[in-house]
Every structure is written in structure tokens, then in C-alpha cells.
Length: 547
Image 1 (cartoon, rainbow, N blue to C red):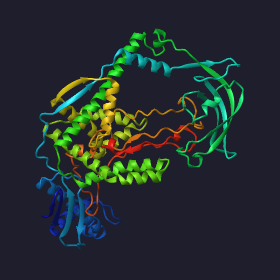
Image 2 (image 1 turned 180 degrees about the vertical axis):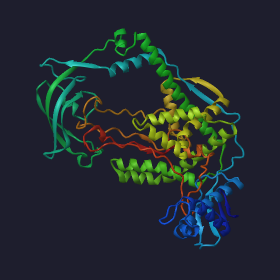
Image 3 (image 1 turned 30 degrees about the vertical axis):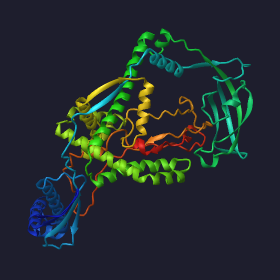
Image 4 (image 1 turned 90 degrees about the horizontal axis):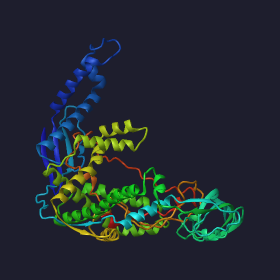
């Protein structure tokens, strides 16, 4: 087979391969003998069908099969002989329309991974912000836990509902005199002052008594995500089933026993361990960001355009989803389109960092053991109860899906290796200071994004009690918050596994195959119930947190 390089520009390569007609004919003849031994045809005993007859009936299919095998072998030989590390699935096209007995020319186009000549990981200096869970933090955790376990009891019939009380209501809402979809419900529990419902609704329940009927008049917010309800005045006919007053929670050993724990001190120890883990995650998030920012500042090399395109497409796909769910999609689209190039820059940076971490991992013999992969597969399968075997089979049969699963762990091991080499300076801070530092990083151009183990959007959102049916609750829309437009603070996953291209690089001579990705479905808000808590505005993508 003849191989000639026709393009060598940056990371792009193109080659012309010529497969001799004699080589194809030999493959066809060899395959013909195999098929003749097993093919069944009326009038002939098994294995006795004349090869010429088989050729006449199946020659075209055998020729195509031989060509496919020759192309696969030729591309693999090209990659091996030239020492190429493809960044994407090579694109293969036939040159012309060869006839039977003709040599076959094919064109192979691909991008290769860059060679990072100078990796600078010595002399890393990082500041590690450390928070120790003090008594006040533990006490706050106990208080929050008690608030979650808040009980209430029926109030006397003459009791008038006050802030903090829970009112159980049936309701029927109308807009312009018409009952609207989802505007009717029964037995809904509303805690006055919780901010659970649209502004003004809860205030009009103050003073209500059991078995009382009331009319509540409110207006839906202008940014409500159900178009025909935006800004509309509404009138709700209310029947109060009952009023409940909160029961004071005594925080003592008996309180702890309600959680199956022997004593309050033992409960505090458990909460302290949980806080330690949570604060440790925050510390690592900040430290990892600083490390990646330092690496990005030290390294600048060309990255494959195809990988950048893939990464950008993933980011933009999420943005498109958020645009479609926004209260004013056209305005948001205009704003996001103006920032399109910034997101592309983010995608390029993420790919570069992913390739850099991959290269560092290879040079320092960082690997993922089979036991670790088995654990990852088991964890992934456990996410799909009743379908575990199918998930395991899918992962075992799809190298790219398996590589996607492997990438985050590989990245974390490389990051841990680099942090271990760095000179760390510890500084003890409060939790508020650490969180503020992380939020400040969100506003710093050049960062990869927020920590994947923590959501640092602290805009509090109120919603109905999840233990009750609230599909038809007149809930207020959630506040819009910054969304992580890109996955966590990880560099591009493809780049993190780019050192292991698939063996089956080509499947068909005229198939333009692209690298497959295991898609992860993201559930959107259910907006069928227009006044439910699902009417929340989606988080807005922020290009700075995406970085």
C-alpha cells in the first residue's frame, strides 16, 4: 500500500492511500473460499457450492467487505507507522469511483494531538484556605437540623393564623374570571412567612381560622415563566381546613434519639465529621482552581479545532436549553449570542488544560487500576435500578463511554499529584471568607468553573414542602441564578482521555465518523402546572463560571 502525506498544517494532517487492486483481489479470493465452505444453496451439498457461483451471487458484497477491511488495516498502519495520535476519528473518503480490478485511492483527514514540549510543574506555589468547624458552626448545623424536623399541631378552633403557623387550605384560582390550568388544589399546607408562594398570598392568610372562607387577590410576577400568567391579577377562593402551630423542638438527647443516635454529643460528632468533609471539599475546590489557573498561565500551545468545536457544542447546547426556558428567551438569546466568542475561548482553554493534565499524567505514570474502573462501573450502574446489567454491558462494549466515565477520576488523580508537588501555604479563614473567595474566583476570567462537588450559587430559593402534593400550588417563581455552563471545574473530558484513541479508528471507507460521546440527559423543569414550583426560572449560563 502506498502512503503519501498531502497536508501538514498545524495539527491537521491529510494522507493519500492507494490500495492495489491485487491486494483487494487476494482478500476477495480468500474470503470467497471461506464463504464457499459454509454457504447453502439449493441443489448443492454444504461446502460444495462452486466458488464462481458464489462470486456471481455475492461478489459485490465480498468486494465491499474486502475494501472495508483493507481501509481499516491501512488507516491503522498509517497511524502506527507515522506515530500519529489522532485527536478525533479520522475522516476517510474514496477518491473517485474505482471499478473492479482498479487500484483504490482513499483520502484520510485527521487532527493530531499536540506535543507539549515544555511542561512546567516545578515550583508550584499555592495558598490553601482552611476552615475548622468550630462550636458555633456545629450549633448552627444542629439548629438547621431541628428546623427541618419542625413539627406542628392543630390549633384551637378560635386560633387566628400568625406568621410561622401552617395553614391547610383548599384553593381555586381564576384569572379574568376564568379557572386557569393548575389553579385548583386541596389540602395544601402553607407556612406563613416561608416565602413559599407568590408575593402577597401568604400575608392574606394571617388571621385566618379553621373552616373560614377567604378571597386572596394577588398578581403573578412579571417574570413568571408561564407566558399567559405573567403580570396577571388573580383571585383565589380559599377554604381553610385547619391551622397548625409549631411545636418547640427541645435539642437534647431525646432529640438525637429521634435520628437513631444515642446522645446529643454523638449527634454533634457526626455533624462535625460532615462539616469537615463539606469544608474540605470547599478547600479543594479553591485549591484546584488556583492550580489550574497557574497551569493555564504557564502553558500555551495549539489545540485541535475539532476538540474545541466538540467542547463548545456541549457548552452551547446547555445555553440553548436555558434560553428556551428563560422568561424572555429572545432577550437572553441576544445577550448570549453577543458572548459566543467568549464561550469559544472558554472551550479552547478547557481543551488545552485537559490535554495538559493528560500529558502530565502519562509522563508521571498515573494510571487507573482495573479495581478502580470496576468501582466506577458499579457506581454508574447503580444509578439505573433494574437496568444494571444493561449499563455494564453498554460500558464494556463502548470504549468512548468507558473513557468518559474514567476521565474525571484520572483528572482528580493528576490534580492530586500536582497538589502533592506544590509548596502549600495554609491560611485559616472562616467559612464565609472561603465561600467569598470562591465567588470572587467566579468573577475572574480564565478559570475553568465551579467545584463539581458543590454549588456555590447561594441565592436562596423557596419552594413548597416536598413531602406534600404541590403540583397545583400558587408558588412564586424561583430566582434566576448563575448556571455552570460547563461541567464542574474539570477540563474537557475528551482531552483527559485523549491519550487512548480507539483501536477501531475507521469503520467504513466513506463514513465520516465522529467521536461518539455518551450523552447525559438533563431533566428540565416541568412547566405543565403553571403555578407549581416548577415555574422556576432556569439558571442563566455565566461565561465566567463556565471558565
